[in-house]
Length: 318
Image 1 (cartoon, rainbow, N blue to C red):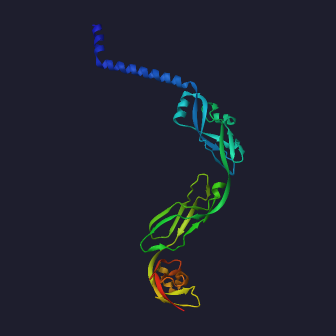
Image 2 (tube, rainbow, N blue to C red; image 1 turned 30 degrees about the vertical axis):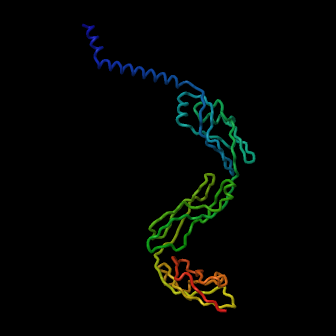
Image 3 (cartoon, rainbow, N blue to C red; image 1 turned 180 degrees about the horizontal axis):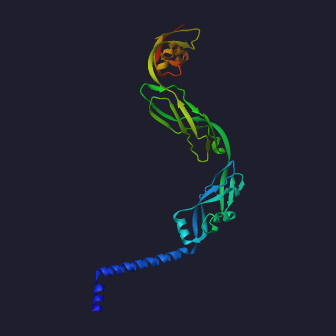
């Protein structure tokens, strides 16, 4: 009867599944212990490390093409796996380099102790035990700030042409080859729509080169915004550059000028504030039958200035 029970247990599917699970767990535990034993041992292998240069001497900027260090290290299997999966960044003291003219040489073997302290394990050797780099002397200069804007004003509103930047100039420092050709610094784009109030905003300066430092790197931009309205004038045309030997008759002698002005200033605007001229030199001694009229004077806060007609005819009397 006991033999029958044993035979029945072997033919029971549930019992077979339980035995399979026990077997798999045994295999997994064995593999785990094997892996722990294997990875706990020390190995020597080539590992790539990201480089961060530190202690850069004042008044120079380093331009190195070496972004990684390839080194043979001795460490545990766990650490090797970790370094392969997540590259570690190690610091290299560039103040210990040999500087000559615009070239520099950095000997990694002289910093082995410092490099060993930054990893779990130790460096055995390097694929390239000397790092070569270029460097430039830093220079300083003061440059103007250029404002980059994209403004859309609400209907009937405009600016007073009094934009201000504080400070209007900043100090830049960097390699001579870059700074000598840098004449201004632009702000990042200031984009605004439906503007009907005064503008006052802090804006960052655009830095297109990581080797260049800007102080300060932000400025204050301000601009006055007012409501505008239009007003018409009849303006007589002035003649300029006319020889004493001739007399000019214009057709017409005056034009209709229209412009927009701030509502609170419009009463102060007079037709005498505008000057339109007929320049005899533009006729090339009477060669052309009609010439354009030039606007040479207008109030600073006027906007959208236009006049009719744009060109006039003339008669020369000698």
